[in-house]
Length: 242
Image 1 (tube, one colour):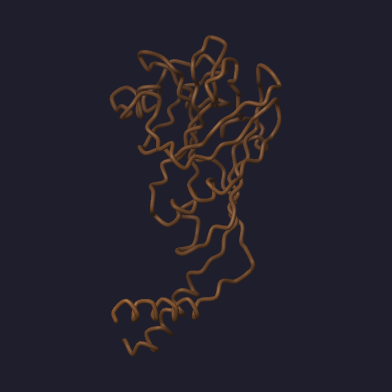
Image 2 (tube, rainbow, N blue to C red):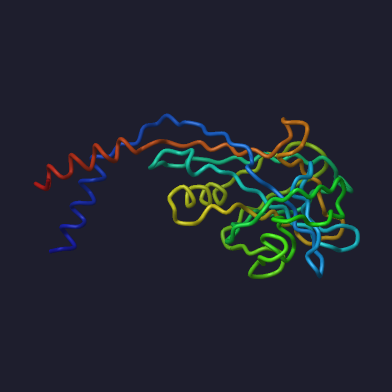
């Protein structure tokens, strides 16, 4: 009998809620970005450089890009996220071969210091920088080298030669939706390469002099906050509550 009551309430609530067809758009630029350069002592970074790097270089050393978009507070209280598009611009590549990459959720807070590297070898890390070993150089460390992330549910995509790429897919939409709902913390994403030799890509960062090349995130959503509040009020009347 209790189960029937719960189901009836759920059906009643669903009947009272109607989601509008029109979608709104939020566009945000990255708030911080950096690169993790594979090294034994974790002494390299690129917090304020014009590019981030991802993939494996010719010396078989890995680079992982870090991206953070502050979109949670910019969205309404209750939303339906319909689709998400991430735009990244490759500014240098060792070849035109299409390479595989992925985005995964970072599980720990990290920093962007004042280090600047104009090449893919990295620069000496400055205080507060993220490195291969550090979340905040020189005293706060990742739970594991190379950045702490959750690779499950990551978004896969490909990058080729120079140009701007649109990245989208159901997993990216799910990651944004989960952060907006507070299911996961929004600490940003790690951009990983496949591990293939000479797969590294140079990607414009938020400090790039060309604003059109900087990373940006476009979220298509529907605000259902007022609908939820109105529907809940109606449902309480149906149930005879206050």
